[in-house]
Amino acid sequence: MTNAEIIATTLDGLLDHEVSLVVYGRAALALGFEHVSEAVGRSLDLDVILRFSDAASIEGDDQFWSAQQQLNQALESSGLYLTHIFQEDQVFLRPDWAKHLKPVLRPTTHWLRLFRPDTVDLILTKMMRGEDAQDMEDIQFLVESEGLTSEAMEPAFAAVRIPDVEELRQTFQRALGPVRRILAGRSSGS
Image 1 (cartoon, rainbow, N blue to C red):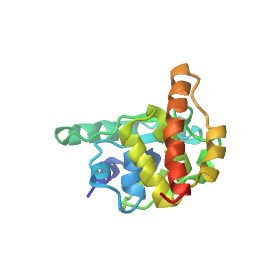
Image 2 (cartoon, rainbow, N blue to C red):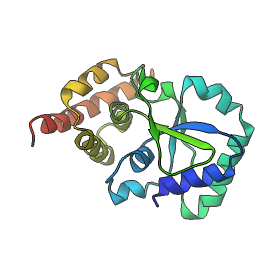
Image 3 (cartoon, helix red, strand yellow):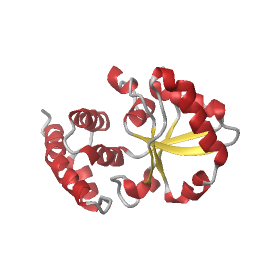
Image 4 (tube, rainbow, N blue to C red):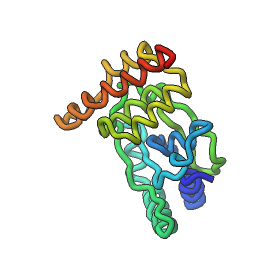
């Protein structure tokens, strides 16, 4: 069982009603893709994007926040946690990203409904730390597993919604070259 599965099933067991979450980061890879590296499965957290349409209900859901705190206390000794919960305008995404969500079917849960962004949007989120080596490895995996090409990604690069922070705009620009090289390698078959 991956760490993301442990976090998700633990949270599910602490909930008393249905909660829908969009996971991203390495948890989205671990839960939403086959044949990920062991390192991906060992990621210590579950990152969440709140859709604007869900934000008010989640923010006002005391039982969810209580379950999240209980989860972090229960898993503290193993180093696993759920703390990174961002509204959609705080993450690199296409404007229509929520229309392209993919259901996450693993692990089986009772109350927790998990989704992940489309692979194109996952790549955009992975660009938030510039040319970070781990994120570039994950992007390489995503490009190869989905057979993505430059033609598929260039419209997303042009449309990406970046938070209004100069440093993040610069970070996106720094990541663009390495990601385009990964895509070019895929397009040329190397």
